[in-house]
Length: 109
Image 1 (cartoon, one colour):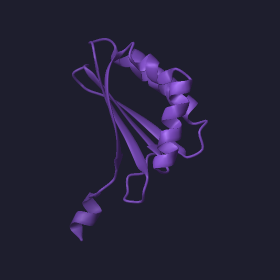
Image 2 (tube, one colour; image 1 turned 90 degrees about the vertical axis):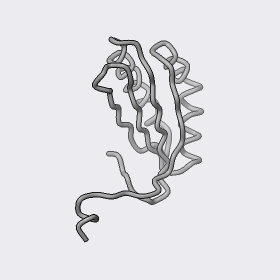
Image 3 (cartoon, helix red, strand yellow; image 1 turned 60 degrees about the horizontal axis):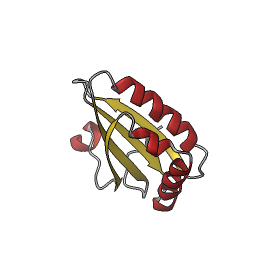
Image 4 (cartoon, helix red, strand yellow; image 1 turned 90 degrees about the horizontal axis):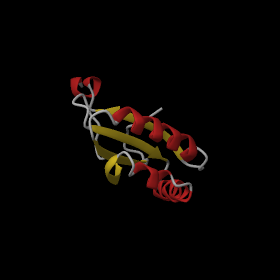
């Protein structure tokens, strides 16, 4: 389950631009990649999002820390999963840490 809090968790956010009709095949590929990533100690979760206009997919994947995130990327590269992404569309990845979270309960305080 995704964890969104300021705690050192590292999140890879990857926005893919795809041709119409290519969202579902990419989502299926990314789901397979998540199962491969889960083999790496420190991998936590992946959440896949599709845009309502059919042109983008966002992969929100979390690891315990930067070292784990880098191990996950290396593992996925070695298994050909990242290279496989290119068959579906253009990727724009980045590694992030949570800077702030707000929700209805904290805003009411």
